[in-house]
Length: 211
Image 1: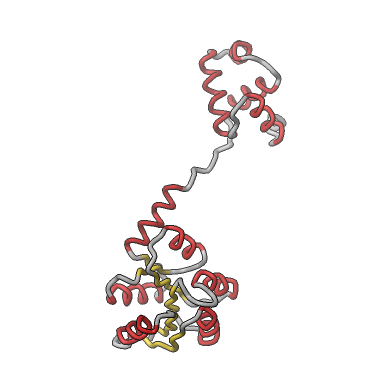
Image 2: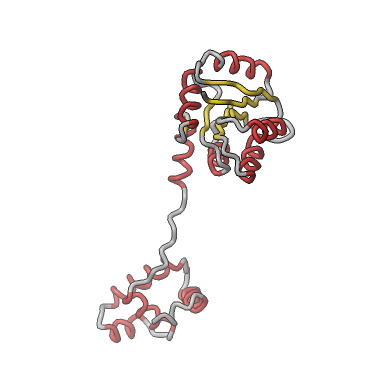
């Protein structure tokens, strides 16, 4: 049996959800609440398997409740119920510890499936929420790779010493074009936009000392 606390500040929505979920033999609703404070308190007191939590709640919003439950070490799996499919809401909910995110316009069967899934230790995102999370993932900037190859370290050391491209090429027995390529790669890896900036970053990070 999966125990639930249902938190929604719209009584009509709350009654409709309770009526539908009561028809499921494996679900038991322990409490229905209409504020974020009550959602937090009931979850901590009753320790349900799943909390169905509306994002827009009075006193404490859903995200705040999530964060407080996370800090408390609560084991209750939280499914966010929302009218909003904005990327910000989805990402903040997941980062704050939500195991599910379901839009209020989905069918009741999908909500039941989500409850069963998060109660078994998995996560569930409705298709729109999943798309928003994927958007965020695709927009995350790539981590800057600051690892320099041995040749790049040689070139960097020469740059810091004040040598020009031709002098570096002669010293390392490579072409000027290759030196220019190494210089561009080093700037990109270290996030420098000028030679002066490159030298400063190299000294600050102690990259020259490592050779």
